[in-house]
Length: 227
Image: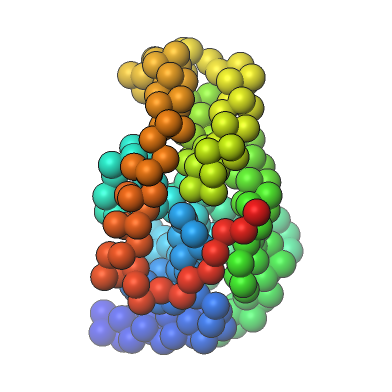
């Protein structure tokens, strides 16, 4: 039975790859493309019990949570994790042994709900809009702040001027110091650290380049982030 399920999963991966040729297979159940300073794509999450899976849209940053973060740390947690819903508004739970029955419906829903285009380059304003909408869904001021920090780093990839505008927006927000303390962090120290990052653009660009040159990354399809 285990061997049979393994073969089913392999075929399912193949069908997703064929249906989404804009993405490259990074590993089993993970399909990505590189867009400038970030990675985006689709992941098939295996649900508890091992009989079903669920697709998610994901975005990872090559910047990580610190400017010296390596690729493994960057891929440890997505900056955006978006679920897809069926016509009834529920998440998809797709049985492996009934994948064919669900596949066309799921694929069509994904194409309608995916927040960023899979084809071609992506505009900075499109990405920023998706980041801002996703930030609103997060329950903690600290978690929202970390996503906005990634937005700043993406802006810094484009130019210092763009990053400074993002920093101005961040400084205007009313961050909850208590939420930061729960994560053993200080909001004022964090804000000062953002200023330092804006002044060290070359360091950020160097780290992004190193991570993009990883042997696992160079096989992925690429697009660019445009202003």
